[in-house]
Image (cartoon, rainbow, N blue to C red):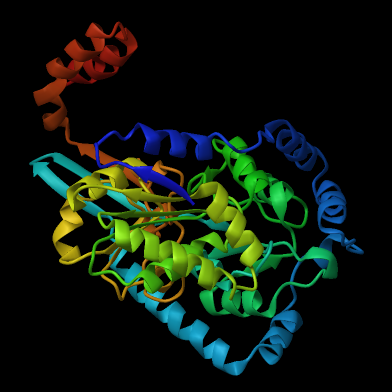
Length: 431
């Protein structure tokens, strides 16, 4: 892991480290654009060809891409019954949390003759992308589908790669059933995003696509935005931990590795005021790394994108954390709750030594689809509002229009839009 000393309050080393990570990806825009255009023109035929080329499985027909009720029933039979119950409990926690984000349409009367309001309606159809690269992620199914269901979306269409077997993980299928997904397709990659955005004879066109994915998926979401809504452009996972002398080095190492094992591009950063603690965490990382089945992935992640940052004060550590704007921020410090107001940029905040990040990944309730690579400066976690569209409602009586007509006419004429002004004056003349 890289060592960065900020005790002189020179944040340039940290900024350089972040820029190297953010600029280190490959540009696959041209490849993805070709995939999108092919799917737009050729629909199912293109999707089937790409699935065979990239996933190594050939479907007999386009209809075979769709998961059947029998496959879902079989998934329940194959999956450990205790895991099914765990998924159900997690789903209840996630649903309970997201129910707090809903709001009704409203209409207010500003004054007699003037009514203003907002009409809130769920999207008709949402598409969720669930990655299945190096490990199946049933938690991502819950986090994407449940907010859509709470919002009132009737059709929730899920795509996820089935790989060389042509079969989706039983855990993912069970999670999708529990979460209320209405249709599931065995399609991944940029071709899945294109199919959802533009529709094919088999896969329905959706209004919004949510969910994380690899660089091809992220690039596809970026390119189709405008024709179809998206949640965000998500990059590799990341964790930043601010720790003081109250923190346990074994806890910190375990939490850093929890993200490092995700992906070779994942970032794990520790910021601490304690040089001794930093050294202890390094030793713990070496020890715990050897216990991981995915240690090669985690080791490369730590080597390339891991860092231990030393600061003089916790306040400096918080300032550094705000510069990073991490996806996951753990505050393993005394009086962690007292620093909440100082956090400006973070996807999710985990308070204290007994609130590890995996609680948020699976079980606590708040969404784990979070902004990454610094975009927590302006993006928010996936939520119910992502699946609701709002329409403004305006109603003026004849008398109310007369009262403000001259103001509106003057404004329109100032912009050189005389037809706008005439739209008002023609009514005023009749008053």
